Length: 90
Image 1 (cartoon, helix red, strand yellow):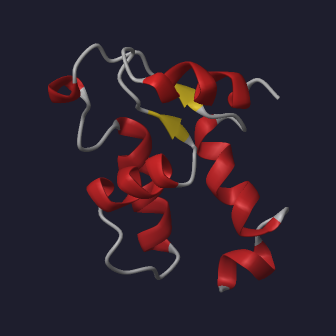
Image 2 (image 1 turned 180 degrees about the vertical axis):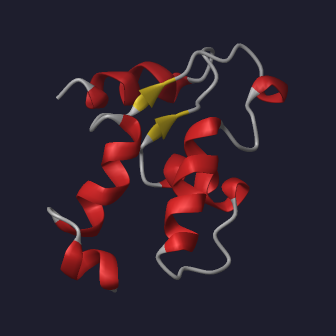
């Protein structure tokens, strides 16, 4: 991957700079409020496409960010919300 070779810090740092190096902590009270995409995922999607990635629209990028822990979108009543928020402070 071009990013891994040319980006200082590699692909991981390239991704994490889009969330200022720490997981975003959202506080959604209900699942219907969790967005499918955000300005962050739109910007990251654009950057990836500029670097030759395909099939990386803002919705897919946001789902990826949720899956790898860049975004905590557990609803506030979920038993995992507080635990994930604690992990983000490490």
